[in-house]
Figure 1: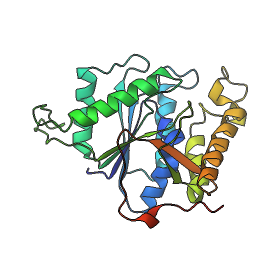
Figure 2 (figure 1 turned 90 degrees about the horizontal axis):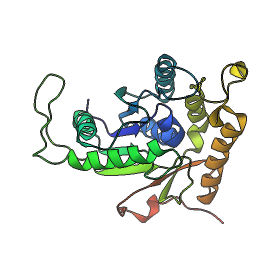
Figure 3 (figure 1 turned 135 degrees about the vertical axis):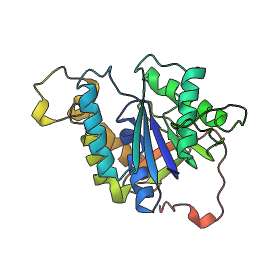
Figure 4 (figure 1 turned 30 degrees about the horizontal axis):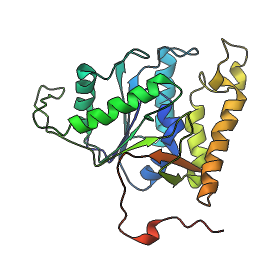
Length: 245
């Protein structure tokens, strides 16, 4: 399936936390969007592989995602080497996205930064004709390089290179995040299992607060931030959101 946008996250729920508002916006604009989870999140303190798959499917339904796949790399122990790059190259060539949304290149969680670099490197390598891969039917794949890779901001707050207004879809975004009932605050599970940094009400409040803070910077209620390694260009000046002061 040819996609307009492929959002990639090392853990199920990374995409929801980092860029689900932007994804929902693009789907409402008629774009085909898929999600690629690199690992099954098996090292997460709460929940199981099975609950993560169920939660990821529920979140995908809420967002309206066209396809979601898990590459089953080892949570915590994957590396940015040839074997992992080839695995990801096959997926990139399968979906042929014009835009890739990827983990942050630097973050508190070491998996996030390592994944961000793996994704960026694989997107470049996928465009080299002399790297040969085959699809699930054993047929040679054509080279494909996404036009843009945008890294969504995660735990470590970085200066965004651009911000996306997600005000109109914010409630839907939060529903997608809250589909991960074993991971994030759920009053029905307060006394079940170990509590973690992300399972507290404070973490949920911080997710909302960050979106508000980023939104305020462009004169809207809520926004998501992205960074890019290359300079962006626009075709018309009035495409920029005006921040009225």
